[in-house]
Length: 250
Image (tube, rainbow, N blue to C red; front, top):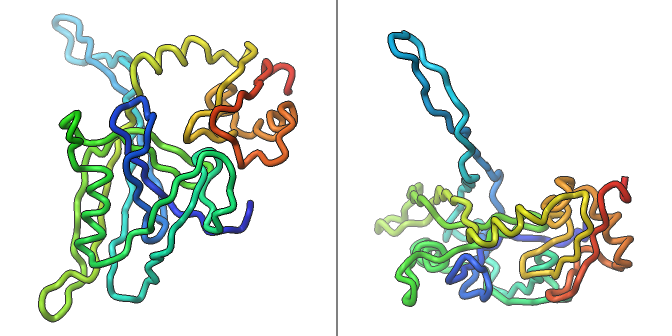
């Protein structure tokens, strides 16, 4: 760990290919918890005349992410209005010294309503080209979730004497959304018993790539050694990484 402050950020994209970042939103403070939910689907199968039914497995739902965001303009919480530079391949770097594909976004200050509108711009506002809400990547250090906002509830908890909102919470739910062709292609070629050569894409981290290929993110140090990476946190978009069969790593 670098010891530097890493803030949860949301990056918006026009399509599920996640090719070009449109907007970024940096959380005022990091959430206390991230809740990821996956449901198991069953269908009833009843025999004629029977009083009971059998539950047949049908599949699993796409993961859903629930996060509570805080919007505050009381002055109690310091609003970072400085620019935060970060690398999509290696997490955030408040010093601006990270390498790789960099973007810059301003942490969101202003009134409570302005903070909420900044959040909606990234997650809820319809794109002029597609007439649909954006696809988003939620990034927090080595953690990544891709999908779309499915529900957003704002609860105002503190007001000024004139009725101006001073504090609010936003309960946001995101549903995982991955382009079908991308999902099918990855499913076919992700056997951990094969040799893989992957090109680093925006948002990739070594932990996540190991999870995808080997179903074991803890192998990131072995992959860093194989590829002679001096710093596994600073992947460069476009570079190719070698992933040997898992039996060669264990």
